[in-house]
Image (cartoon, rainbow, N blue to C red; front, side, top):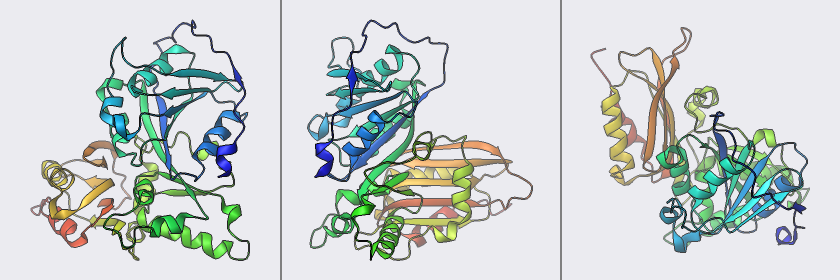
Length: 368
């Protein structure tokens, strides 16, 4: 409740006649998607960004297209006569805030071109429970070319009410939005930790972290009060940048601990498979497409990250997937001291470890 009573950020008039930025600067602007349960603290987080003197020029897009218009429509550039941004407001700390009704693509293009260089863009997904469709398009969409890039997905959760929200699926054939939002997150802000009673806060917060990691072992969890967090931990995460593989490799090194042990009734969990032999890349692509596109073995994979040891290649390949969209790219040479392995982390619903492991082994080159 308290997050709806935030004071509005101090605003100044924006100069709409400012010439577009120079096109010489081809460094793309990172986009962070913010999601979370109603009341978890998304508005508080946005206000924290817009009011803080952090010295960064950050644009915040408040999207209001919602489910009734649909992501597909929102991601279409409708041209000069299309539905544009409803309102632009420039704030005293240099940030920009805008509300988008229809074309998010146009809003992003305008943001990148209308003013001097932006440091980052935050997209607050008010009308969407599931951030996956947005993430897929922002990640590998040709419309946006290289002007913006998906940096990460941040999910804000309420420490006091998260357990209730996760358990609200009991007696129902579905599971709540909270599972999806955590499953797709790169960073989870565990907000309102101050509202957990002091005498039980240690044990309760530890249990909540365990529940979050049961769903998504790859997520970085940050504790917060009123969503006041260190911006260096949430901006420029480069979670979808194939050339930024260090963090992914570090996570995959502890692959044995990444598979969830205690499963929720929802069967949303993390699972990691690890195999030593080199794989045929074409076979891996077919294997992945059957799982992601055809839902083979009745599994529903939300996210997938991994490193691959590819036959006849000295390059470490990274694998990423969001729903049906995936990318496999060579990242760097394997180091001499490294144990060359295939390690893939899956986050999803009804994951079957035996089926994944056995079918993946069929991609290996036994002759090597």
